[in-house]
Length: 538
Ligand code: TEU
Ligand code: CA
Image (cartoon, rainbow, N blue to C red; front, side):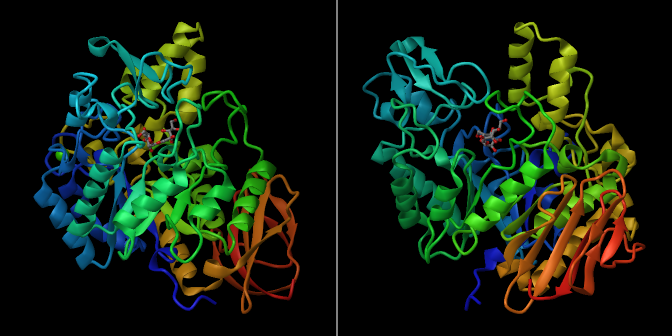
């Protein structure tokens, strides 16, 4: 057993997408005061850390992931005073707050870029990546990653939108400025960062190496030395392109470069390999289980992982992996499977009440730049509207960005004004008020699950051992340490099925269906889930 367990290993992190969480002043946009008014709701769920998606000053081309000024709060979210109040209030309630740090790129309206564009010899020219000729690297949001700028007759690099020019991390002057920004926020009292696409800062563009590039480790080390070292904070790196082995190396050791990572090996399994996120194929549960087994075993005692199924870029977990005909059962089942594993649990806002994806008829109702771009690109290729919409319904980022559903009143209690993005019309059925009033609601289940995790050491340090590994409809695994032995079971089956549980069943820690008697040979209903304490020396 570890002598001193880092607090963030036992924490529950809740991701807030500020635009869509709670609007306090009726302008249709969520804001910091809105968040502050809902801290009780989060505390009661068992949340320890709040992760705020970006709230810095931004033209909002990519909803705040395009930063214009790192040292200011965007006025749509409130003021610096509001931010300080939010930090203080969060701390008073015994929770912590981490911010999103987007340092692979800025907005093209950032003053560094406005300067950089001016001339080849401007002092800020090398803050960004300029070349005389483009290469064939493509942007994540479609089209080329190079944009021509007439003024200096050259191209700048942008891996995301053309309003998000990539910073040139080879430039020590730029790096120094970034460290000052990071320290500014840490000195203000925030408790750490989620680092956006941080696997990209070591890239070598001319060699076409982007993620996990040759400079990554030394850059992370410098960032750690200049900013994180000696502070009681948590850092989580978003690393979509990183291998598991590198992820493990970066997060292991006594003073890891980053405390944990988001890695994405489970995320692309419903895509046709090599065809990108819009080319759909059904999920194969065996593959899904194998990916998690690899993740759990590779990183066991070697690095630390973040447990997530959804975020603001991914579809709603219950729509993607569950079954809307069994919305409540499958929401709970997915949570059981996910949060039974080793790592720090992340809840994406709305997951705790089983919010679902959305299907808007009209492409104009979508606001996400990626969705808008891809619609244009695919329709130019002659792909029929229905086919494109099917991909957008399945994978579009606005699925998880629709306003939070607090109650069944107008705009789901999110705003008294006109919401910036339409609500999911199902808010009369699915909302906090209704879910909380039901003792069998999803929220109460999440809460209980987190309590169980925190009061049983085995969830922290138990080894992951697969159960019924070859079954294509059941996700099961054991967690085992010296003292304790638990079995986690989740059915992905829309039919009842028979299972056999070896060993003596000592206790049912949690289940999404208490009417079912747990025995060594049992029939489980669709989307059944439970965690059992077992006796045995398997
Ligand atoms: O996302 C990075 C990323 O690579 C993906 O999650 C990507 O946005 C998605 O696959 C596109 O389908 C981060 C942020 O989370 C995202 O919101 C930003 O748009 C992006 O970086 C650029 O800052
Ligand atoms: Ca507002």
